[in-house]
Length: 390
Image (cartoon, rainbow, N blue to C red; front, side):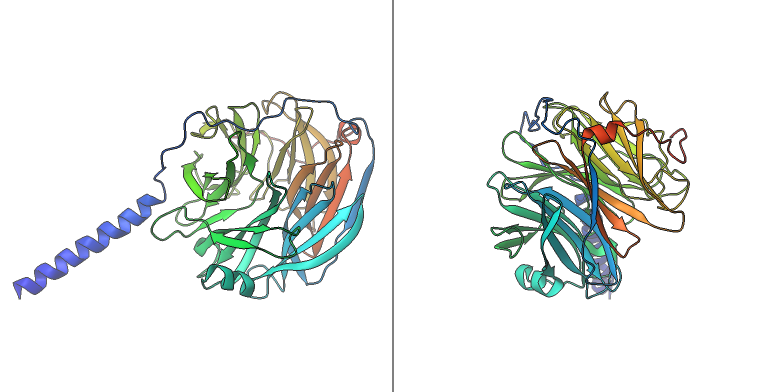
C-alpha cells in the first residue's frame, strides 16, 4: 500500500515538473550568434518620391468573409497579396487566397493553400488556417508564414513556413516552426519579417495562451528557428508586433494592445540586432485591440497604419515619423465609417518608391491602395482620437 501511495506521489511530482518545464520552455531563449545586424539600407532618393498619385482596387471576393491580408513586392516588380477567406474566421473551410497585380491591374487570383493541403504537408491535424504573411527571400522565392489551428481556438495555434518556386501557385516545402520543445502551441504571426545582414531573418510573432506578449524569432536562411526572444510588455496583453530597422543594430517594434482599458500602441526597442527588446513609452495614438502595420520607407521615414479611434475599427489612418518613431504626424484618413471595419493593414514599397497598403474592407473583402510619397505628405487630417499613452 505504501509503495502504491509513494508511486502516486512521485507520479504527481513528475507530472508537475513536466508541466512547469513545458511552460517555462516557452520563455527559454537559445544562445544567439554574436554581432547580429539588420540588413539596413541608408536613406536614398526614389523616382516616385514626389508622386501625388493615389489609386485603389478591390480584390475578388470568392467567399463571404475575408481578413488579414499581406502584401509583398515580387522580383519582377509585381505585387503579391495573400489573405484568409471562408464562411467566417476560424471555420474549417478557410483557405489562403492570393492575387497577383502589375501596375494596378489584376493579373490572376487563386486559392493557394487549403487546410487539407497543409495537413498533408506537415502530417498534423489542421482544423483551420489564418494570418498569412508573404515575403520574398534572397533567392527570389515566395515564402509564406501561416497560422494553423489544430485544437481549440487561436490559443492552440502554431506557425508554418512554406516556400514556393512559382510565385505562390504551389509549395515545394512546408515545416512547422518549433518555438517550444514541449507543447509548441499558441504561437502566431501577423506582420512582415526583417532581413538580417548574415542572410538569416527576424520574424515578429506573438504568444496568446495564458498571457499575451510579443516574440522575436531569429530564423536561419532556410527558416529553422535559431532563438526566440520575448518582448517586454506593459500591464495587460500586448501582441502582434510590427518591426522596422532604424540602423544596422537598432529596431523599433510597435505592438497592439489586447485590452480596451489601455488602448494605445505599445513600443519596444532593440539596440543589439534583436537579441534583447526593452520597453519604451507607448505612442500617443489610440488603437484599441486592432492590428497595425509599420514600414520604414526608402527615404528613412517610418509609416504607420492604424485604427486611431476610441473603440472599433471604423477609421483607418496613416501616420509618419521622421525621427525614428519619437514623434508622429497624422496623415491621410484612408477609410472612415463608424459602422464599418477597415482593419489589419499591411504595407510594402516598390523599387520606384510607390507605396502599397492592403487591408480588410468590412470583413467582406481586401482592398489595395497604391500611392506616392507626395500624396502621403499632402495629408494632414487629425486623428479622431489622440491621447497620452501609459
